[in-house]
Length: 457
Length: 174
Ligand code: SF4
Ligand code: SF4
Ligand code: FES
Image (cartoon, rainbow over the protein chains, first blue to last red):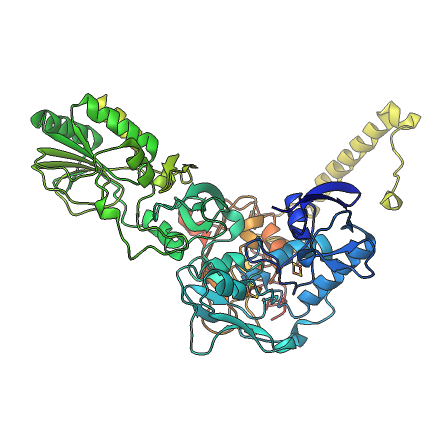
């Protein structure tokens, strides 16, 4: 680690590591600085020129993203002169921008809109008809749509495919007015992390085909959660909304920054896994394929339990929250049942890579290991009470608490998915993380804890 | 800022104002003048025998039933940006957007409903629309129906309403 030095920004003294980027300090200290091309995970590129600041002793304004801090440096981020610079550069960025915010999915979370309100507010000098025309609807592949007219050529997307995924699909071709983002000839954007470019793109040039036009972003509510795709435990936002007269539904997952786990990104498979929470859900209680009411279901549950007294096994899914697993283990002890949490079925080495994806495809893998539960398959059980474990077990009778529908004559009891409940998870390296409850369904399925209350009551 | 402030003199401080009686006298005078006029000439009364008689003084600024406008090429002007639905204080505009495939624009409403029973006819939707795609210039002020559903106007119906004051097509840039 290099030496800590002091620098002055807008007459206040700050401490920073010698040789670190000035823009990092400005962002960290929440000193307002406009920028498009800089990104903490992609480094400086210095192409958008928005991040200008004045530095004492330098004749012209300098870009903060490519300036290394030096001891005694005096920086000015707020003078009238620098504000004029920001306004003028923004005006240049907007010269050929189509201003089609009404049809643009980025509206509401767009850097151009935000910076225009903060630094621009100028009248356009170029009319719409005189603006340079490009392709507005290019399907890049991997669910990513490109609108070349909206692009500010910040090269965040191309740097992502160069520096992060090393797949090099994207490039900027042409010069001047002709410059545009494109895939390399004959190629498509094709890597398991491709959709992160949608979040990286500061404007509406790259949008997600999956989310496109489904909802305006200002209607969405975000809950902090953890992806359930594998044991890595990537931090996400669950963006959901309950439209008037409709049910609360999830529209997208977005990565949530956590430098200790996933940095800025998540994999595409995890990002799209929200769909599973919305489809094929078990909604009613079934016994022998017939819908039963709660009263009948609980009566049936209790009679099965008495019938197989002493020969009951409880099976736990490694995606349940730790609090739920603890409650199930305690319940099993009370009814004298054996507890199993088979992990074998979650192992999928083909899914793993050296970026984020883990071969253990269960979100609370770490908790099962930490609690030291029996991970073998249950054998010669009379009755199996299965708490959403994906495997089908052979037993004389089965009770299945399940989030999703399944072919079975067992007693099927619908339960809340992780997005409809809160709790903690332990990932593969033993880090404990908390998930907020996101979705409030119109007719919510009971959580594990409320099921246990019901069947014991 | 301060140069824009206009100082308005406060009224009501004179002796005449404070006595109240002159004002009461003025009011009563108006009432009795109308009473006298109405009794002497029944035909001049400013009341319509609605519905036999229909109003003739609806102006172009009157906020009547909504319509969705067309572009010059006769296609729908709305781009499903949800500005009206966002501005609407009664949350009574329901839109579902789709990709527009005819090359005119990128996005359009797949469905567009206004529940006119919930609508308060404030006109915010018209103000909010960046495309001049929704207007309340149909001059239609009376709505009847046999069920609640009759008052929920769909896209086709809203497109079929004609403007009552000219300007048939959307004035937004194309
Ligand atoms: S598409 Fe987006 S991320 Fe890529 S260069 Fe253009 S503005 Fe930047
Ligand atoms: S007139 Fe007002 S209440 Fe009625 S639809 Fe428009 S915005 Fe909503
Ligand atoms: S952020 Fe510094 S030049 Fe773009």
